[in-house]
Length: 468
Image (cartoon, rainbow, N blue to C red; front, side, top):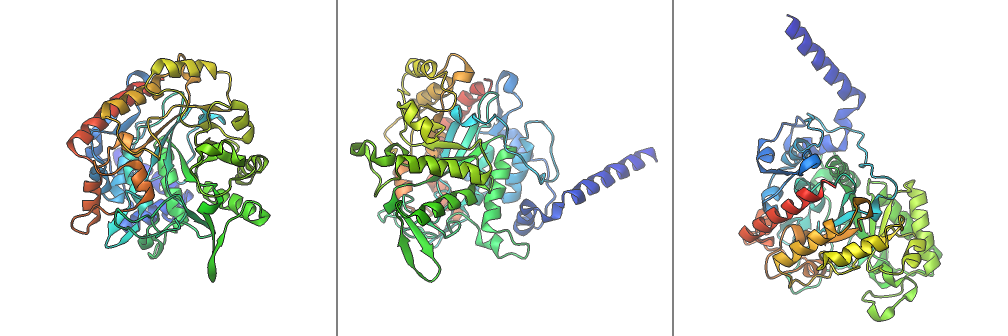
């Protein structure tokens, strides 16, 4: 009788918690109900069997490895959420997703030491017929395979696409047709490549914005920070209008500049922690001989204002702003408001990165850092070369607090098929399906046996790095 009373008390406590959090109204549970008809979560034995863990004091940090993304992408959303909760660092499994999820706390200057891992969520979206959709749901399914943050510094997932792209948004095209992510529309909401129309139109509707927030919440449960890529070259920006043609963007138009700020703030308020700024090095026309964007960039003081106002309007002073190719001129980029800059130092030489780590150790607001690869990567590096750069990025310091920020791409963790590259998938959006199913696209997008072995090797590197 006493045992029955205890069970009843536990049940009443659970029900009380669920009602106090208005559990049935949360976006993640509406998503689960629409996708699978059930919101009851179960411990995932498959995840337990495929989990790697950190070494030493980081043993509680777990993630799935020695897989190809196809293995996770073909799973259901419910399985993905169950996998995320099974990997929970505190060892507890929750039968429901908490409603009030906070980003992991690494302090206001977290972005200065972070590892940034860019995931092309358009490339892993569902491809069927000539349409492309559900990219954020695929990113959710991939979260269990992203190594969590270390003790001293965060891992941050950067999504390649949030805003609609100018050329063929919502469609896949043959590999020889341009469908570039280096051109976006503002004032047009979320890209059709990214969200699920099925969830938007369901009885228990989950909006495109809520789907983005769900991704961020689940990433935060995983102990990860999150961010997205944006552009600043004005000929790569358009302003959408409901009943007339898109408008060309101009930085010397005050209304356009304010719209840009407001668009960034809207997305940040969905739970992101960082913004990666393409071509940030070339603000104010700086070093134009290296510039590969199209159109004018903001003036220097204008870029300062933009970053300041995004932080102010979003209410998030700890936002990390990463500037592409913003390297040695510490004063220029720190005073611009940036937190980290890419592609600095020789990632093939760990002693070189240790030297720069020591050089910049007193610069706590901003530092440039090395990269395994970037969005312009055309391939050519061997698996071992990538692994060596990863070791350098993750261990190139004397003390963990002096670690430089680092940068890598999806391909560095999950190797792509041999006839494509990171940059090719930024410029084009082909389906690799052989039978018009999303599963076939996912299977053919990545390498298999050697890709699994490379993923295993990256996991071993992270396992030791997470202990710092």
